[in-house]
Length: 385
Image (cartoon, rainbow, N blue to C red; front, side):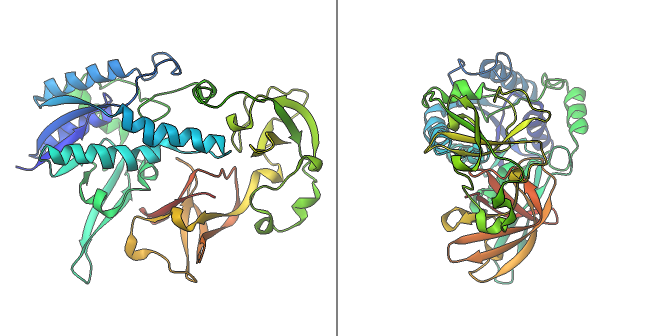
């Protein structure tokens, strides 16, 4: 009997994952990962780890499987939280959930599972995996979108590698969310009606400014409005990627308390009135502590024609499909979770990947992950420069 360690989060998805594996004949061990202690920045009752841990234990008892808790808070702080602070300080927008899967669930947690004698780790992600043998006799693993189009979470796993995938199981990937809840209900699992957790991986829904203020101090700076008729827009978007504006390109309309608290495409938190349409953040500059904004969601400054991924930040889940410098290929792309896929051309260069969109895309934020797909298979990903 093959042993599998399930990351029991205290939610319905991982609960049903454990149940299904047990039904399939695996020897199942449930483990709850405790990765966060500080509740001062969480929005009350949204993701309290104490309640989640209790629910995970109740599910394990109901299924009759061994259960224990592992404290990974030190590693989580070092690998995820410190990274977040560093990225925001640099004016970038990190995605801690993607990093959490790469650095915690399928690295440190995987090592823990293997030390317990497990062949696999399993999670409650809505995604799928299959494998085939290539012409050289090597086993290749494919990361596939979940069957539920409203819950597909393959994007969050866009940084895993072949070795990690070889040890991963995704038991609910073939199911729709209502089916998962029904299975939990039929088997009297305490998590059957529990609402989905929101916010940061392992932390829950946070007051992000309060969270960032733990290390990033408030610092007053200017909010500069850039007119939609700004002369720079007459140039090719590809020529002006990156920081487009200086304060001379607009007018100062207010102040803010720190450029590192804002992200491209953000409309809330500016607290500036007197406009017919909402103001959106077009660009932040943490060096000059300036935020550039534009009125309306059709403002040309919100849209980009492409992006670049630096060479060291390019990751191929399917290593055999990696592009060599000079090669190019079209894929379906997304630059944030749950965004509809759109078509783009990937062009490999000596410095990384240039990605040119078929149609301009809104709110492309440096620090986020771009992930590219072929049909329902996630092929690769990278950090937006």
